[in-house]
Length: 156
Image 1 (cartoon, helix red, strand yellow):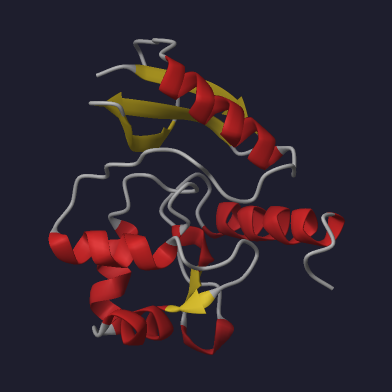
Image 2 (tube, helix red, strand yellow):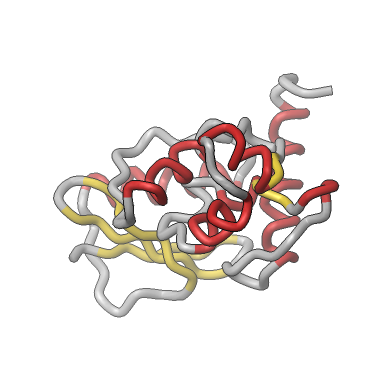
């Protein structure tokens, strides 16, 4: 499986490709590196994201997961950059319960691109985050998106 790593403000990230689609984004540097056209495009889009020049991604994605997980991950992609939704709100949108959404959210194999960081606990509490430095990384990603939206004039 071709992989390509990049250094970001939240540490090294490694993208993985399978059958012409991104299947994973992991924290840390991958052992084997390959510069496929898709991985280079994904790297460039992530660099633009961290530079505040991109808020959404235009990449073919094929995360491995159950039908339910796929529904949750699709719902996450509908949350606008810089905004949040609670686990309960996501659950209601797909006809499920918050706990199941939380489990699927935590199993997301393509964080950032599938924005699991945009889901928070009830009452607006930040909640956990399994990537990078945990909640500090989640806060960083949300603030990055909010700054980018303000700079682009799409949010007050």
